[in-house]
Every structure is written in C-alpha cells, then in structure tokens.
Image (cartoon, rainbow, N blue to C red):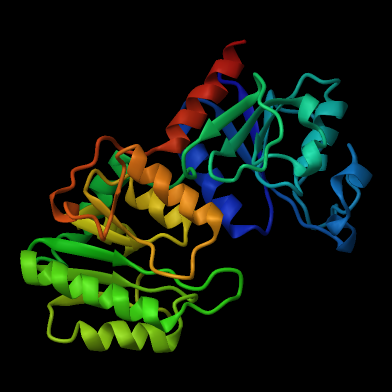
Length: 328
C-alpha cells in the first residue's frame, strides 16, 4: 500500500506551481490529496504566534483537515507551516512534515522531516540532516509532458523556418518597472542571433514586461518569422508548446520558475541578465545555472555553441528525498 501525502495549497501561485511539479514527480508512488487552505486576516500573524494551531485559517472555506491523518504532509509556503504542525500534533507526531522553503525565523524547524531550500535564497541559517538544498525550483516540466505537448503543437509551428528559438520574457521585479533599455538590449541580441542562425522566434511576454517594453521588442524584431503569445492575448497559452518544440530557449533571468522550466527542456538555454535590474538573489541563481552547465549567458562569446551539461529537474530530486523518508 502506498503512503499518503496531504499537500497544503494556499493563494501563493508560485508555491502552488512548485507543489504541482512535486505532485507530478510522485505520481503513482504516493497517494496524494490536495488540501486548499484559505486564510482569515489573522493568517498574516507571525508563525511564532500561530504556533501549532489553525489560528488564521478559515475553517469553513478550507478543505477538511479531520482524521485519518496522512503519513506525510507537504507545507508549500511559510504560511502553511502552522497548519502542517497542527496536523503533526493531532496525529501524535506520526505525520512527517515536508516543508517547501525555509520556515520563517526557523519556527517549527525541529518538527520537520525535510526542508527544501533553493541555494540562491540564502535564507536558511542552519544546515542539518533535514535541510535539502536544490538549484532552482520544482516545475511542471517532465519528459513525458514535453512529448505530449510536442505532439499537440508541432503542426501549429510547422510553417515556421527552423531553428525555433523560444523567447520567454519576464520583466519588472518587486513592482519596479522593467527598464526600457533592457528591452532594447534584449531585442538587439535576438536580432544578432537571427542574423547568425536564421530560423524563427516563439515569443511570449508577461504582465511584468510592460506595454512599452513589449512594443520596443516587437518593433525591433519586425520582419522575422515568429509565433507570439503576448500578455493579454485571448488564445490558448502555447508556453508548453514553446518548451516542447524549441531548438533553443532565450529567457530573462528575473524568474526562477521560468529559468528552471527552460533548463528542464533538453535544449540550449541562454540567459539575458541586462543592466541595473536583477537583485543579488537573481544574479546568484543565474550564475549557478551557468556554473553547473544548465545554461549560458547570452553575452558569452560561445553562446550559440553552448550545449547543456545536464537537465535541471528539482521536482524529481525532491520526490526521491520524500520517498526515502517514506522508507525510513
């Protein structure tokens, strides 16, 4: 009989996306039940106050947390830590806690069987046997998923000259607009890539890109064959098709998730870091991808000759650790 795992999901979209990747990696190996957690205003209280209680949880709107309790519980954000600790306490400490991200101020750390922390965060103060450090973030990218998406999208992109270069554009960080000079610089680098390799672009932007930055890029790339999915377009999001069909991926380094997804696709990945934009955390992350051979900087002399040294898949690494805990 498989072990049971409750996954605590809240309103943090990024954390939910990472959890979905871990769930996919555990498919058919553990019986997973997703539990949606909804907060009251008290959910913003520090975890050292909320402790091992359901303070701050809207019991009526949240999913049932009654027994029988699971073998394991995955806490997907810092705010779900008290809920996970509550479940462990109610199970008479039989339920093992898996924590995604280092808990705020280390509260509850001793209660956790496994704490998953990204190396670039540097938020964790202690390194112990329950700390598991990963590069990047768990994502939805898996080989079987890419095969399915390729079958779906390959004909749609068939009219475009190859090679296909996917361009994944983020933008502003922490509510600060993306500097327009970076949009111009990215477009200029893309034009140089096209001048050397030919082919087509698969371009997508995000809410954080900004209309002006987006327009600068599209104006500069005018005349180059491409398929676009720009922020706000009313059609099916082709991002998974981009990942599945691209021969190369160019991605802005402002999103750990986007970069992690790109580095899981078995194709060369070029990082655009720009100027006066990325935080030290983002720079550390980009440097780690280059150092480990998952990606190359778009400005590197040998950028177009780059071949990845491996495929990044933190979700599989995390799943392996969880399965080890199941066996302990």
